[in-house]
Amino acid sequence: MNVIDLGTGAPVVVVPGVQGRWEWMKPGIDALAHRCRVITFSLCDEPRSGGRFDPSIGFGCYVEQIGEALDSAGIESAAICGVSYGGLIAAAFAARHPRRVQSLVLISALPPSWRPDARIRLYLRAPRLLAPLFWARAPLTMYPEIAAAIPDVWERSRTTAAHGWRVLTHPTAPLRMSRRVHLLADEDMTAEIGRITAPTLVMTGDPRLDRVVPARATLEYAQLIPHATAVRLERCGHIGFVTRPEALADVVAPFVERHDGGSDRARLTSVHGAAEERVLSASAKATADRPAARTSGPLAALPSRVASRPDNGEDWLDPPNHRARRAG
Image (tube, rainbow, N blue to C red):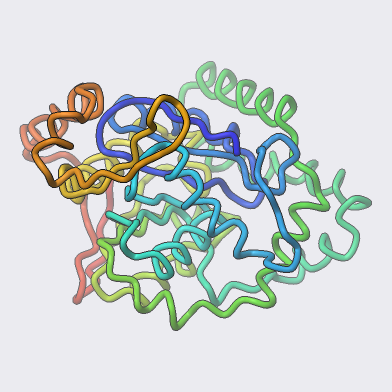
């Protein structure tokens, strides 16, 4: 499997949305990689992912792909971050493999109760035939968010052009997107998601701007996972990884760092580039052997940077009272 491994610091695995391509999230990936070690990939049924998709397993292939990425990166556990459709994948992994999850971040995530509305059902009937209509509507759907997130006209034009180029050069396929949605019909993960024990951050955009996954739907996770913390990122909707990557990273990175297992995390190290052995990094030897780059760098300064800003604009929804507040 082709795994992208960027940056240093607390590790976080980022799972892409229904389009399946990690490249569509690149601005957010780059912003996080300045603060964390970011591990990401394209979904395993994408032709260039290098992964294996078994139709008999279906959605479970995407879930197990997270574990494969961790193994490939040589770590036993990490923060798991899922975006949109990837949020449901990340939540399923956290429920099924709790020992491999340091924390869970769900960004504009599909909840387990989600079912396609009439418009999406129309596209699903003939995804290839109706693809031109889908892509023609996409800019109109996303423009209000882009305009709110990026007031400057020239910067907005540059960001839009750059993202359009990423979409053109890393295309997805309507049939694969359709299949991924259909796979959810056989999944009922409500009960198992309710058993998630990892510290969980649920992030939404402005309810008026997210026209893909309603914010109220993503906030179902705050009900299913009683210890979850929720935050709203202002001036963005569904594509904060593109429109407000730095602001998004400013919220996600401290949460990941706060719950990083550090030396308590078991690590996998390669031996002469071949066989792998598991070493408990809680031992003094593993701590000494840990590469310095993985424990130093920009992340070490994050807590003091955030703490030095008394009013940092981060307003949280704190359970159990669920008081809705905002993150600037």
